[in-house]
Image (tube, rainbow, N blue to C red; front, side, top):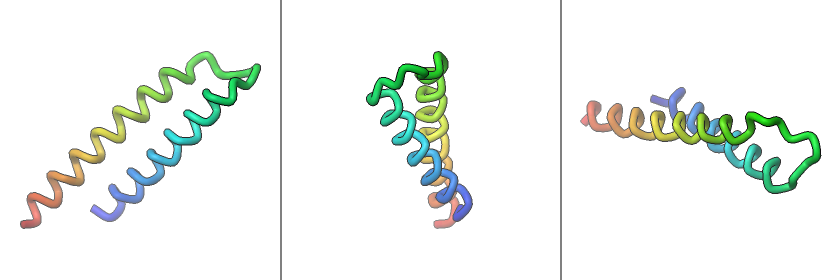
Length: 59
């Protein structure tokens, strides 16, 4: 479960960095940035649910 929490933290940091990049409006923004943000958010949801399930199974 610890590794899942570390991965979740990294995903959240990635999400923040992508949002900052998007808001700054760099001229050379990757065209797939919105897709990457969506993917990161989906992965965050998956990891949150997985951690909740793992905690529940430990009880």
